[in-house]
Length: 117
Image (cartoon, rainbow, N blue to C red; front, side, top):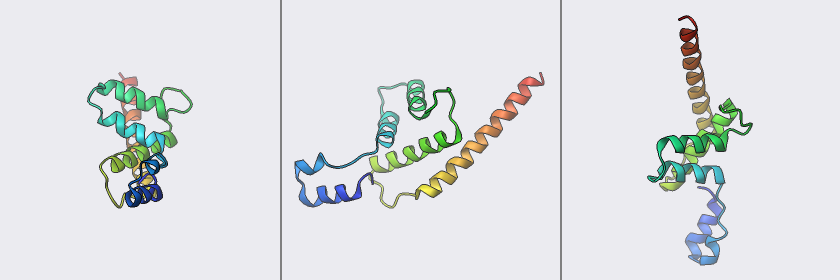
Protein backbone atom coordinates (compact mmCIF):
# COMPACT_ATOMS: atom_id res chain seq x y z
CA UNK A 1 0.00 0.00 0.00
CA UNK A 2 2.62 2.52 0.98
CA UNK A 3 5.24 1.25 -1.44
CA UNK A 4 3.85 -1.57 -3.60
CA UNK A 5 7.14 -2.15 -5.42
CA UNK A 6 9.10 -2.28 -2.16
CA UNK A 7 6.53 -4.58 -0.58
CA UNK A 8 6.65 -6.93 -3.56
CA UNK A 9 10.45 -7.02 -3.37
CA UNK A 10 10.38 -7.80 0.37
CA UNK A 11 7.74 -10.49 -0.14
CA UNK A 12 9.81 -12.19 -2.82
CA UNK A 13 13.28 -11.96 -1.30
CA UNK A 14 12.55 -11.92 2.47
CA UNK A 15 15.86 -10.09 2.76
CA UNK A 16 16.40 -7.91 5.86
CA UNK A 17 18.15 -5.37 3.65
CA UNK A 18 15.01 -4.93 1.55
CA UNK A 19 12.93 -4.10 4.62
CA UNK A 20 15.02 -0.98 5.15
CA UNK A 21 14.21 0.21 1.62
CA UNK A 22 10.40 0.21 1.82
CA UNK A 23 8.98 3.75 1.72
CA UNK A 24 6.22 4.89 4.07
CA UNK A 25 4.50 8.31 3.95
CA UNK A 26 4.96 9.83 7.38
CA UNK A 27 1.50 11.45 7.85
CA UNK A 28 -0.32 8.18 7.07
CA UNK A 29 2.03 6.18 9.28
CA UNK A 30 1.74 8.61 12.22
CA UNK A 31 -2.03 8.87 11.88
CA UNK A 32 -2.47 5.11 12.00
CA UNK A 33 -0.04 4.67 14.90
CA UNK A 34 -1.51 7.49 16.97
CA UNK A 35 -5.10 6.36 16.48
CA UNK A 36 -4.34 2.74 17.32
CA UNK A 37 -2.34 3.57 20.45
CA UNK A 38 -3.95 2.64 23.75
CA UNK A 39 -1.39 4.60 25.77
CA UNK A 40 -2.47 8.03 24.45
CA UNK A 41 -5.67 9.71 25.62
CA UNK A 42 -8.30 10.63 23.03
CA UNK A 43 -7.82 14.33 23.67
CA UNK A 44 -4.05 14.10 23.13
CA UNK A 45 -4.55 12.01 19.98
CA UNK A 46 -6.77 14.72 18.50
CA UNK A 47 -4.42 17.52 19.53
CA UNK A 48 -1.40 15.76 18.08
CA UNK A 49 -3.09 14.88 14.79
CA UNK A 50 -4.51 18.38 14.39
CA UNK A 51 -1.02 19.72 15.04
CA UNK A 52 0.38 17.57 12.25
CA UNK A 53 -2.17 18.66 9.66
CA UNK A 54 -2.69 22.32 10.69
CA UNK A 55 0.04 23.56 8.38
CA UNK A 56 -0.47 27.28 8.99
CA UNK A 57 -0.82 26.90 12.79
CA UNK A 58 -4.08 28.88 12.99
CA UNK A 59 -5.60 26.31 15.39
CA UNK A 60 -8.23 25.09 12.94
CA UNK A 61 -8.14 22.98 9.81
CA UNK A 62 -8.75 24.48 6.39
CA UNK A 63 -10.52 22.28 3.84
CA UNK A 64 -7.30 21.12 2.15
CA UNK A 65 -5.73 20.31 5.52
CA UNK A 66 -8.83 18.32 6.51
CA UNK A 67 -8.71 16.42 3.20
CA UNK A 68 -5.03 15.57 3.79
CA UNK A 69 -5.91 14.33 7.27
CA UNK A 70 -8.73 12.08 6.05
CA UNK A 71 -6.60 10.71 3.19
CA UNK A 72 -3.79 9.90 5.63
CA UNK A 73 -6.29 8.29 7.99
CA UNK A 74 -7.74 5.99 5.32
CA UNK A 75 -4.34 5.15 3.82
CA UNK A 76 -2.70 4.50 7.19
CA UNK A 77 -5.47 2.31 8.56
CA UNK A 78 -5.77 0.36 5.30
CA UNK A 79 -2.03 -0.32 5.36
CA UNK A 80 -2.09 -1.18 9.05
CA UNK A 81 -4.79 -3.80 8.53
CA UNK A 82 -3.35 -5.04 5.23
CA UNK A 83 -6.43 -4.19 3.18
CA UNK A 84 -6.17 -4.80 -0.54
CA UNK A 85 -7.87 -2.66 -3.16
CA UNK A 86 -7.97 0.54 -1.15
CA UNK A 87 -10.49 3.23 -2.04
CA UNK A 88 -9.05 5.61 -4.67
CA UNK A 89 -7.81 8.97 -3.36
CA UNK A 90 -10.39 10.81 -5.48
CA UNK A 91 -13.26 9.07 -3.64
CA UNK A 92 -11.63 9.76 -0.28
CA UNK A 93 -11.22 13.42 -1.25
CA UNK A 94 -14.90 13.64 -2.27
CA UNK A 95 -15.92 12.07 1.04
CA UNK A 96 -13.64 14.44 3.01
CA UNK A 97 -15.09 17.49 1.23
CA UNK A 98 -18.60 16.31 2.05
CA UNK A 99 -17.75 15.77 5.73
CA UNK A 100 -15.96 19.12 5.93
CA UNK A 101 -19.00 20.91 4.45
CA UNK A 102 -21.31 19.20 6.97
CA UNK A 103 -19.05 20.16 9.88
CA UNK A 104 -18.78 23.76 8.62
CA UNK A 105 -22.57 24.03 8.22
CA UNK A 106 -23.16 22.64 11.71
CA UNK A 107 -20.60 25.05 13.14
CA UNK A 108 -22.20 28.06 11.42
CA UNK A 109 -25.66 27.01 12.64
CA UNK A 110 -24.32 26.65 16.17
CA UNK A 111 -22.67 30.08 16.05
CA UNK A 112 -25.84 31.68 14.67
CA UNK A 113 -27.91 30.08 17.42
CA UNK A 114 -25.47 31.25 20.08
CA UNK A 115 -25.47 34.78 18.62
CA UNK A 116 -29.27 35.03 18.73
CA UNK A 117 -29.42 34.35 22.47
